[in-house]
Length: 146
Image 1 (spheres, one colour):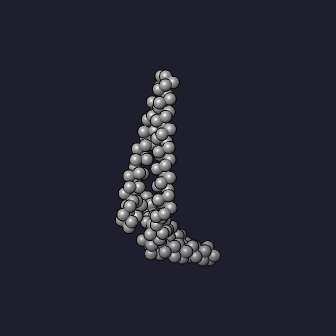
Image 2 (cartoon, rainbow, N blue to C red):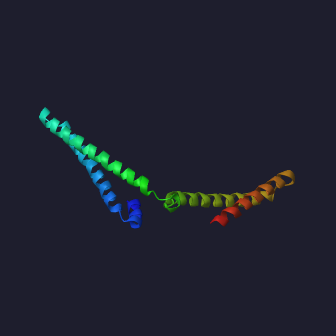
Image 3 (cartoon, one colour):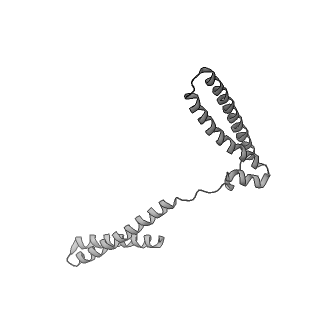
């Protein structure tokens, strides 16, 4: 509907097509209802009448979609005016949560490594210092994002 409204403001013609769209949606429900009645019809004459109604409604629905599609082809908005898709709020929350978990993990790892570093010497101490520096760098990058 937003598309019909936004183009309708520009062109002043979209309301009729929006009504066509909503009547087509209603027609789909009516066709389904007639199919249920057709299934429970007792006689062939009843089925014949219902089938004629269903056929008429389906052709009306097809012509409605054809007119909507032709209107769409004539009135497409340029891509730059279409609304941009915003990131999913749940995904943003998950990213922030995982970032916070990683920050806490890095702090815990650095704290433990600094305690263990006091008892280390030589190559092990150098390797541990390199790891602490890498963790510190990652921590600083993550804290910049927040």
